Image (cartoon, rainbow, N blue to C red; front, side, top):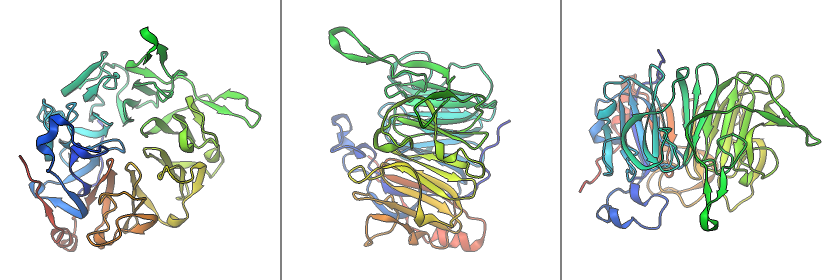
Length: 427
């Protein structure tokens, strides 16, 4: 049986909570009634409805305006935007505060992942349930449908799945033997099958040949200085992370591979070309220089090296310079990073006794600096509103942040209790 995270604590939220507005100029017509629900929370809040709920994992995604939490019992709760049924409650009604997914209440959930409008959930026995948008086959159900509002098991009968990640409109799953499978939208080669799936349909329209069921990623390559392409054999995948349109993996030899959309240097190959198959990121392919953790943002990538240094490539602020290959993040030199998450352009990190965040304007409170404080920061800063609160794990959506605050000691409980409570308005 798969084990979930050993973390335990209380959920904190900050940032934008008007779920229908996130990443949009205005609320869509069908959601007009919700126009004034949800506010920007500039500092950490607790949810009133979660008093007494212990949380082991929080999940969102850099493309997502919905969130998930897994309780210490392995129950999955969801809330946020829901036009495509990505909350798994059997309907498409927006949900203001975390709510148990009834359709999975008989399962023990150990992991989950959020795409732009879809969700994957992994059970302790290694099976995967999917719900939400399936226009591109990103649910792996063998068909393409607009919305699947209740959890459905993906079409897959291989080895038990142990890890998952979602891009905007595609999905990755990894089995216990270190094989990687992908499904959904192939647009920039992000599925890793040596094609972007484009074909010219009738009337000169470009369409995509989507993968509707999990398909194994079979080839891994490296490019030599003189441009030769060599296969890299025996890649055993240990972890996977997805940005909006790119994917990173970490293998058993601490190597990092990246592929998909090359814009802004997010693949780390010192060029902006799209890559159709997983390509070795050279920097981490040296003894003692391997990677131990990987994270993907919307248009960027991070890795923690085996000696603890944080490396960044790509762009968070797309109007500024891009970083074309992995560079050490000097601001975090010497910090031991436990957890890192990216929003559209903001970053949050749990390291040692601190929570650290940064991101360019505009921000909506996801940096957590508090009321009447600067809203954004291009340099990494400690989140003072969380002083004395130990962040077990962080997660970030498009423009909101989630933190699991440890509540072991009385002092910790007191500190958390002093934070304001967020009780969303409802219709």
